[in-house]
Length: 214
Image (cartoon, rainbow, N blue to C red; front, side, top):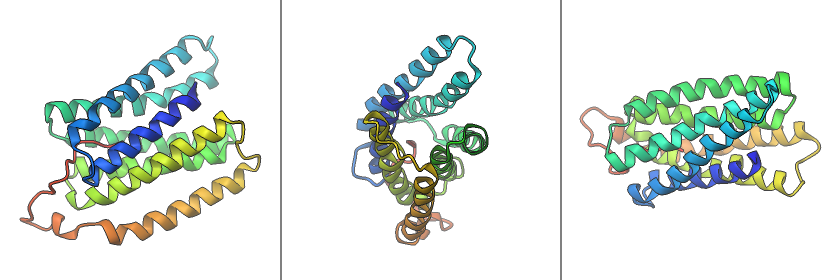
């Protein structure tokens, strides 16, 4: 069930990313955020209620709410035209929690791949915080590109590997490749996509909607 949800997390991250890039009209992204947000609320609730008190299952399900609430929050912001600061500061909370889940994946669960994936998400949600909570409009296109890429790398790719039984046996090697690849790609994109003029004093706001993180 978690693998199926992960696939659609990839879809909504990709859609919200291309929206921030200005390729998709903002309100048209709201329905998928509602669908995936609802799925990410129903799935962990089911897992927790059927866990029989298994702490490991409850722990694994608990993190899904962070994303479900994010996507529903995005949908409300898009449809109601709300200010994005509340979502931005919630994203800061998610980013900090993602670092904790990453540490748990490395130290307690022994899953280095998802340890790295949680760090990917921590970075992305930290960008959402800067973009929305701190009004760093110059990060709009960069954040969109990071979200769109992560939709494939942290959502669709691991989901298909899990669903088809092709999850790599050597998790350490795969995790290292993900970590190095992410550092190289995201570092290379930053000077190309960051709009320094948008954050200059008195600069006009970005025309790209900034109320919709992954």
